[in-house]
Image 1: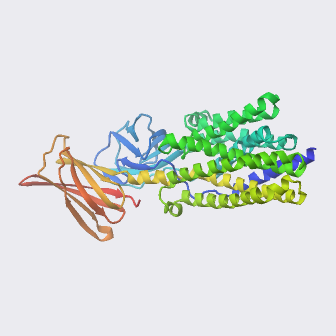
Image 2: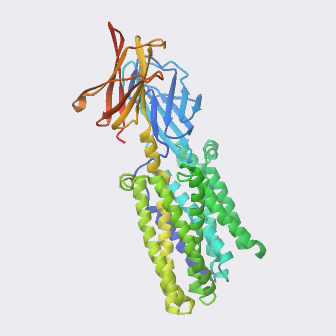
Image 3: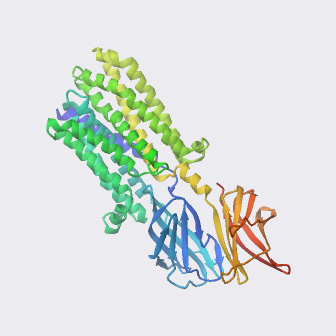
Length: 534
């Protein structure tokens, strides 16, 4: 008996390990995008700022904020305030001349850490101090593997327990297999939470047990996914070992827990409108668990006890069609929300992962259709050769399902096009300050193409400045682009505006404001502004 069950468990371990070479992303991406910094990246200031600010495409929570001085020493920035999508950070000291680096790590609303840095100089630029760290691929591989083990536990384990409780007549041939997968999930859940804390702090694997790492992990929304996932895994184990009267109830609650765990965090559940995306993620996760979890127990039953497996096969065949409809419909809607534009399927790493997943799903659906409409009826009738073919086909389905899990785990490291589009639509802003005048200039959206500029002008001591005319002048000499001059209009809300302005290429532009203070005085102030490519 032990030999009969050692094969499937060993096969599962081998498959999970083999999946570690699939779907690993080639680049490190974030899910909340930085929209603007103050001081702007690359800015040269005449005096030390009293505060810094970071504006993101969505609300974030700071994890680590550090100022690296020109000599390489670091200053922890612990005083900050959150205002909508902006982190306002107090500067506790007078900065000396030279180039400084503002380094930051925050966690976005979908539970994923985001890191980066911006350079600015006081007086004149100097050699930039070293800041930030190289990508820790060992940590990233561990994060991916732990996420894959959690997926296996939730989908194959919980789904398998549900299939044994609700569909199977004889539970013995698959019970150890399902229990083994649930244990993988129970191991992967806390590991993935701790690794989330390491990633949030940018700490190495050696600090896994540090209290600060776990405190950081517990402050992210991912803790709810892990907590609900652990409850679902526990309920699934109870359905295997508990009294018969509780088996179906425990297994049903566990399957609902899979959907709830996935809906608790992640880029899909964090997308707007959440009244739609969270229920869709819930349905998608529960449907995956039902289908994927039923495959291995059904295949083992057909191989080891084909006579008793007929009832299992019949019940699964009747239930799977509406489940696949729910799975496909929820997946299509979520993909549309996340991708938005068809071109993003090719132009973004998220889109390319989605195309890979869709290719695997197409293969899976085709194989499942052949099984459902060609092999199921003869297998139920007792055709032993067809039963063997069906077992082999189900085994291939399980392999494809594991591959899909590996691809989905890769999404942990890449932002959806939806988030990139939100960031691209955000303005870029600069503050220009001189003794005679100062201005806040915003260009929306902050990328090349047709934009609108908004200007607020004041005197050098923050007093009102009633200008007669304001002209915006944009130039980029290094690209051979002569100055683009556009007169601003005053709509009556205290700002000056330039509409229908076209910025032809991205990069660092010089923005100058010609302010006609009186018939005899013209004030010109200027500063660089970075225009994004998209």
